[in-house]
Image (cartoon, rainbow, N blue to C red; front, side):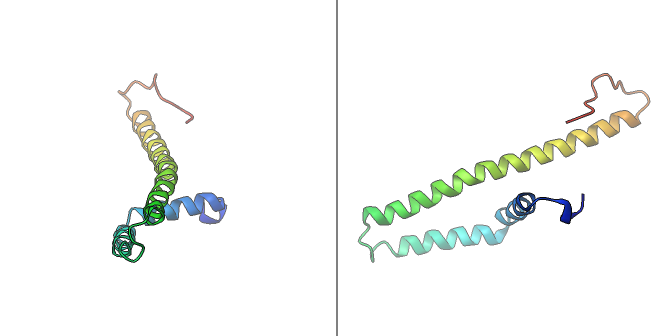
Length: 102
């Protein structure tokens, strides 16, 4: 399947998976936390100041759960297909339990 055949969601999910697993994403997250922490005295450590980080991390966590699950499903499917190919290619292997469609 070429890149142009993939849906916008599929292309975005692939990009997001690669980005969120990168050093740049980790450094961005650290920078956000540091900026938030340094801004505490400016906002007098108010409830709103705390709510900003709590809400932000909750939203990111919620979205990441789905992104991680999608990535995991894709990886599992690829592994299953490869295992099926290996079993089918080996004459001595029993193919009674091959999963033909995933």
